[in-house]
Image (spheres, rainbow, N blue to C red):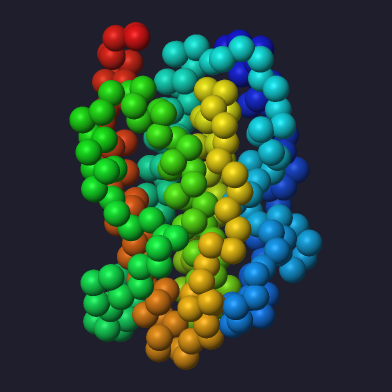
Length: 252
């Protein structure tokens, strides 16, 4: 492993160790969930939203020297694939279909699809035939999409106050998403590509921020989880491609 890659990994590891006993975020202030006011990029405890620094540090601020070799990029992408599988498995384990069974009966197709939440997965499914480099080049897009889901899941988790089992499931889902964001961000940094800008709640509309009654809130939350589920399943078809296939591709 080259010195530059070792430095990047060491910085991330030390930062993760320093924050390992802290929650990934705090619940958003109710005033931002029930009004049209723009929320700052910090939570109510003064810290940044967890999707802004999923590794605990801004990787754009780290100089890692020369561009990573193709073998290093492949290694980084394999780490993304492994972390994605952990996220995918945990999401399935939470059994949201059961936890939101009542809401699923009320949810109609596209009942809750805000324009800021990724929902079109057809382009992802096309990646199953893509070469390794084509998938690696799309890590910044994956990073931006995951930020948006992180923002939505923070809202869902923050609004859920009555059902402890659901609250705990959402907390686990958020933490796994944070780990995946860190792995994707590390991969982008290793390729010396630009890490996407942090996404804030200003992309949400006043309609998205309206205070909902319990029934409509649960339907909304299930709609968000369903879109996240579809997104994960689309990428699962991409990452299920055997690792050796990545290695067998000819170098450009």
